[in-house]
Amino acid sequence: FNAMAETISNRENMLKASEQRNREISHQLQTLLDGIPDVIHLLDQDLKLVYGNRSSSSYFKVAPGKMEGQYCYALCYQTDAPCANCPALQCFSSGESVEETIFTPDGRIWGVKAFPLKDETGAVAQVIELASDITEKLRLREEANRSSHLAALGELAAGVAHEINNPNALILLNLPLLQDVFSDALPLLDEHFRNTPEDQLGGLPYQRMRSEVPLVLDEVREGARRIKRIVEDLKDFVRRERIDVQESFSLNEAVQASLRLMANPLRKSTDKLVTYYAETIPDLSGSKQRIEQVVINLVVNACQSLADRNRGITITTGYDPQQKMAILEVVDEGNGIAKDDLPRITEPFFTTKQEIGGTGLGLSVSMRIVREHGGTLAFESSPGVGTRVVLRIPVVEKG
Image (cartoon, rainbow, N blue to C red; front, side, top):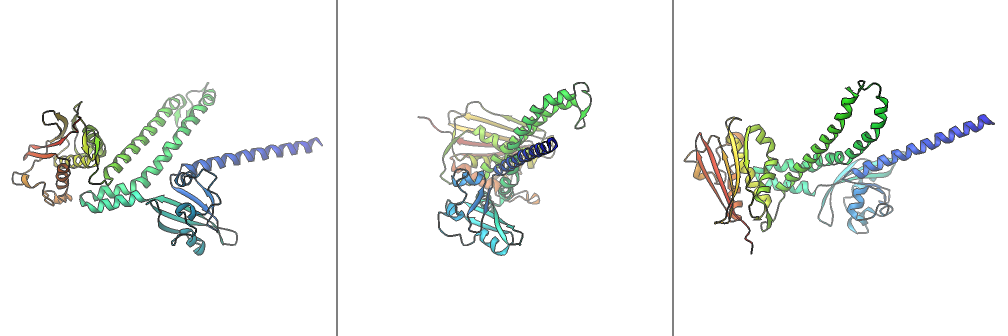
């Protein structure tokens, strides 16, 4: 009798442990699915939602657990019939994975992939839908097509959100968990290595590992934040705006955002980048993104003119209170511009850099943007000595 009772008790303990493990796995899976910024649906044969992740709940503005049992087309389109190119219906019909582009009433464009889940007979019992908002990606691609000078940057930006931002978001989401786990495990590790602090853990002596791992995790966090900031700057830079957009913005902030985007080309071009920012410059009025575009064009030209990394670039901001003008100067120690070419450098399609893929649109577009803002763009250059560019833009007058 005692042996039987012990066996039952052991089985109960094993069952409880198994249930606990299943709950932990379920929680981890739910955390993973909710951490994915794309919309994930599990649909039955009637196109009713069996499951939707947090991104789905957020997009449809429906509380978690309230979507299940609703028709997907009712949630997406507020209609009583599936869309004509429904990828889920195609997946149920063909038994194969399907990819479609879906346009929703709110003006968004979605790239939707449908994957079949088959039962033991081989019939499709359910379908998993993975929907990515590609509105921004397609818009940026169109922006790139409108300007050949910015085509490469536009193509990069179109893929940044999906290829960089999503995995980086997972890093930022999961890193606090790793930091908490390490912090909670430290007392156990300290006790384990109390008498043998020189024993190795992860290939390092324990005491060194103990001090360096928190620093490494902090560096990972700061690196991920920097990636996020660079991606946001890039998206802001390529974002298409209306011609009549009017916003107040700081010249210094626009220059700093442009230099962050140009950090890698600048590092490759020169070891002597010098910046001077005036402390008090009234705000400008217009499009910050377009002024950033001008600054980037000027810095690109300066980088391309340098013969070697020992030549420098100096960037200075200032304010002329009498003329009520904000001023930006970009001075390089590059090859300079020939006297005969100087009057033509802002003409469309005029370029002296055909061998490196120059289109002759950068300064032309920059001049147009500056004029739209009521400003001026002036050039001074001496061959073999360098070039000085002065940008002047009216500031916002306060009543």
